[in-house]
Length: 189
Image (cartoon, rainbow, N blue to C red; front, side, top):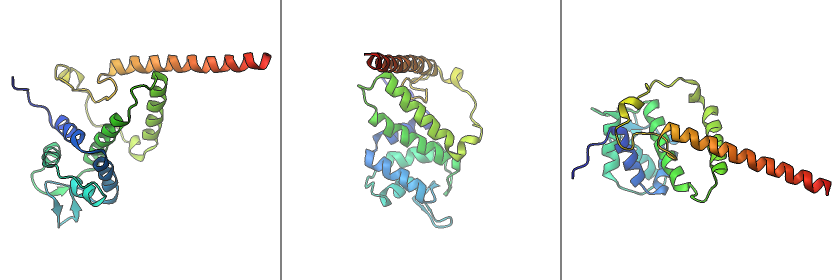
């Protein structure tokens, strides 16, 4: 049975997931240190390079043509041009999300996951681009029937994520209460 086509963002995510971890890390370093282009390997006019070449120059020696096709489709590249800040942020988010999925410890408690989520959220909020309002419209109703549409890694759906976070916060508060009570009982003994 033939699978229905996936959207451009999903193709990019799948292509990034296929990259080795060292290439993903090298690509993130390459995004920071190079001008990134779409629609070409190298653009002589702008002096930019594609993300895969940026990764290659930073130690990620991988050749994966599916990533290049997915990147160009995602950016709708009709001719070589510099990538927009939004496109680079999206690629960085996909790379970091893919690396985070590799680092996720299956034995971690919900409280530990909640702490990690809060720490990551605070780090994101401190970034300079966090002050700009998002321009994407809410597409949950439109995409609900599409498999794997959600952008959240741990739970894939916002309502599941909200419930997971609430459970993690409850577990964390119980741990803190147990620690406080444990300290009080040992001080009275």
